[in-house]
Image (tube, rainbow, N blue to C red):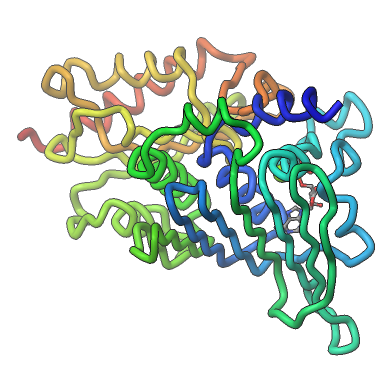
Length: 328
Ligand code: ADP
Ligand code: MG
């Protein structure tokens, strides 16, 4: 029923930042090199993500907002070899249930005779569709978020709070995909802008507005079997009073993990003042069959087969780099 669908949608789409996350992942899955995000009213009034990715063929446009029709999981085996961020085929369907969604797209490499198309959904119902010229890529516009879910609407915090979550999210992806250009405008104010240079240290300085490149040290470690660690750790001077500046990616996916967080903390606890946390971006690559990220719809938890080995490697890496960095 419509109610059940709205409840299901609520699980995935908790707040405006959940919408931004899903749209961003879709753009990245489409191979975008340039992603522009526009937010108004904390995301309740408008969320728009434009990309220059491979686009959605006209024949598929009708189906992208229908639950599960796009699931990429064909067999159990596929779960172990996920190359894309999305795989449930339900994000757009969920969003279209609790908002108005317009998708405009033009397939990459399509000629003049194959123009761009758009389609609008509202409250799970198809509203309108048509053709309109546009550059290659896709723009998804979400307005009136939670208009039909009063409980969710009242739970949503002030625009400033929602914006804060969105900034954090976009920073994470901009770090995780340093080769992609990102821009985030909050009510027309440019909050994040990266060049997509592909250089993680450059991305780090662009995102946190650090002029001091030399205050960031490189991390590299591998046992040649279970893990490859790559990243950058801010000098002790850059230590923050919040864990929010710790960015950990596992196989390209930003994750939250108590165990890995504790392992990192064991590495820096004795070397930073109490209550301080480092500025850190760390990318962990592990063999696909040794990781499980399919734990929660939000997909941020991670289970690792070689947890102990990897935790110890994280502690060692952080400690090693911090010990070598000049003291305060
Ligand atoms: P999933 O990402 O899990 O497949 P979504 O509901 O997020 O499910 O998206 C449904 C489908 O719509 C995707 O699988 C993809 O084929 C298409 N799609 C969505 N956004 C884009 C985009 N920005 N560019 C190209 N295709 C897209
Ligand atoms: Mg998706």
